[in-house]
Image (cartoon, rainbow, N blue to C red; front, side, top):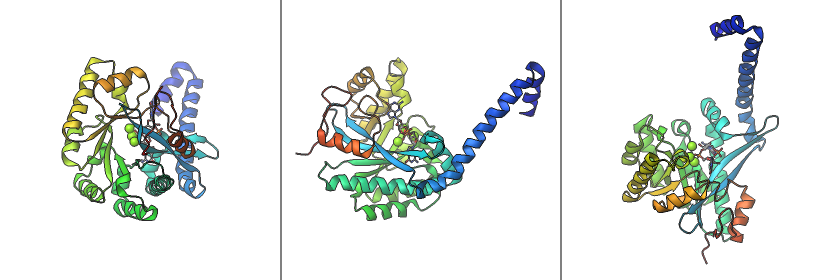
Length: 296
Ligand code: C2E
Ligand code: MG
Ligand code: MG
Ligand code: MG
């Protein structure tokens, strides 16, 4: 860095060096701010969950939902989970935040069930760090107990990085699965161990990563997508396509017999109140003829 700075300084004058230095500084200050305020975030009620519908692709009915964390920082405003989750993982605060997420999602799902809305699974993202630290099994048990939610109405979403520390994580996953909680592999196909993961882990669902869907016009990607869908079906797994943004992607996935999907085409992640209205009103969102799942 010092050498590069010297080179820049010599080559194009002091201004470039100052510019680089300031940008780096701002990034570090922001990261430190996030790091320091994550801990207070929970106590100060700065976190909320929003929910994104998961739909059955053939009927476009809502069949499930994914809970996604949102954080409004008093000074920085809305901070994306893509930015703060990795920091929370690094510092370990993900363990407490993760428990809050589980608690809130389980309670919310129970409330909706008691209001008479159709039973559906809530999917909660869980980081590898939560597997390694903190007692994930007892936290899940505690939150199921707390909310009195049927374990079958909770699913956890993990990534292929779970294969680090394999033995311990595999055992823990079996214990979680034995509770009746569903296990889903998020961002499927982007890791190094996709095939190993489906052989070794007690999973129910694979979520086809949105990078495949984004390039679905490409022949090679289509082959990969079809292969994953067919393999998933043959193994009795649910296959969910992530990041469906347009009709073309939707139609191609339908042709490929993909059973479920999530994406902006159907709905962005929305506040609980809006999600509930969506369920009650049974009204069209982005796609004409959109129908919500009702049990009448
Ligand atoms: P993810 O679990 O793969 O979640 C999907 C992400 O894609 C979400 O971003 C969602 O808003 C976004 N998305 C949904 N539909 C579309 C679409 O059609 N197009 C595009 N381009 N994006 C779409 P979000 O909410 O910003 O979350 C980012 C990541 O942060 C999540 O990826 C997940 O890995 C992590 N995350 C979010 N909430 C939690 C949480 O409560 N706990 C943990 N451990 N991680 C979380
Ligand atoms: Mg997810
Ligand atoms: Mg994903
Ligand atoms: Mg992810």
